[in-house]
Every structure is written in C-alpha cells, then in structure tokens.
Length: 316
Image (tube, rainbow, N blue to C red):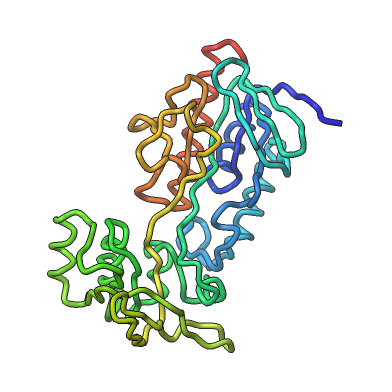
C-alpha cells in the first residue's frame, strides 16, 4: 500500500553531490531522506578507476567510491531510499514528490542532485569499450593517455576545450567533426588551429570503434565521409566523445528557472533555485566543471544553505 511521509529535507539523486548533501544535512540534524534514483551513484557508478578524488592516493573504482559515500551518509543518519521520483510539485509547501513505488514524500526543503548524462554516439563498440579507452571527460581520464594518440568527437565548445586540454598531455589529437566548420566560439577555434598537436578531420563520422578484447583496449576508429561514404581508419588509443550532456531536469520543467540547455539556474556562489527552499547542486546546475569533487563541494553548499533556510523558516 502506498505511503505518505513528511520530512524536513528530501534529496533527489545519489551521485557525489547528493551523497555529500546527505552527509552534511544528517550531521546538521535534519534527518534527510535521499531518493537514489535509477542509477545509484550517478555517473561514477559506471566509471572504472578514479585517480583524482582527494584522499585516495591509489586509484579507486567509481562504484566503490560511491558505495563508501552511501555508507558514510547512512552512518551519519541519512535515510537512503531505493526508488525513483516520477513527479514533483513545487508550487506549494510542503513540496510534494511522487515515487515510482506509489509512495509520496512531503518535504519542507528539497535538494536536487539528479545530475546530467553524457550524450553518446550510440554504437555497440562504443558501449563495449566505455571505460577501456572510450570516455566523455578529458579532465577525468586524459591523464591515462599521456604521450598517446587520441580522437575527440564533436565540434562545439566542449569538443574544442577537450581537444585543447588533451593536447597538453597527448602526442597527437584528432578532432573528428561531421561538418566542415566548428560551432565553437571563435576564440576557442583560434587556439585550436594554432595548436600543432591537433588535426581536424572534417566531414567524417565515427562508424565503429576498433579494439582488442584481451586486454580490452581501443586501437583505432573507423570513420565514414558524410558526403562520399568513403571509409578510413585512424590508429588511436583513446576516444573522447564530446557531443554534449543532457541534465536530468525534465521533472522540474515549468517549475524552476532553467537555461536554454535545461540546466537549473542558480546564482553565483549559491545553490538556491528560483523557488525558495529548493536547492540544486552538482551536474544538474554545473555545465562547466562536471567533476566529482566540484559536485561534492556543491552538495555541501546545498546542505548548508538548506539548513540555514529551514532555520529561518522555523522548521528545524
């Protein structure tokens, strides 16, 4: 039978932002209830080794890092619910959340940490080598390809920024774009064309990612010319897909202010959304950095701001 519960603070999302928010909120005595969503742990749950999270001098697997954060949140007093939010109502208080199980949550404050998903090419070979040479984050994984040859797929700001970042680490960077001109800002294009390590490959799409199975690793990409259909192969050891991200904000459409790409708008230095008492943290409002450590930091901010807001409301 469906149940209805009233809590002071609810958190939607269970990546680094959501779990950190739960830890800080629990330590503040708010007894937060966190709804884990479809993919507990967020993007890190499908990541292999993480080398750049502070406090772990040796690489740690993404799922293990998320399991540790979840355990810490529980130990601090947060309640984690294995369910999915399917509807929210933010136009009146208490805020209302409907879960896939049929249960309803009423909350005085809400932290949104639902994250964003990288867009992928949709290739079977891309899925097979994801985490074994295929990545959507140069800042996260570029370190593993020092001195090697890689390909970046895309033509917007993200792709150019990824290519420029990788050029500082890699011996050679191919930028594969389906058109004959980039969409990126002119200043970024000028920097890219001035970098001798980067070679644009115009009017081509990735048809298949090539690799070995034992050990599983990328060895190249097969490209197809969009006009002639001619195929060619590039020998690369890494493929970075940089065709954008989609924030998980459909639930909040027409209820919160968002930018043109669907990211929740928050003021600089704050996680407060356009609705008082609703806070957003992590990749759902950060389209620039998208790092586990910055997501965790903004989760801390959201919890502290929610605690302060609830205290002012008199709900603590």
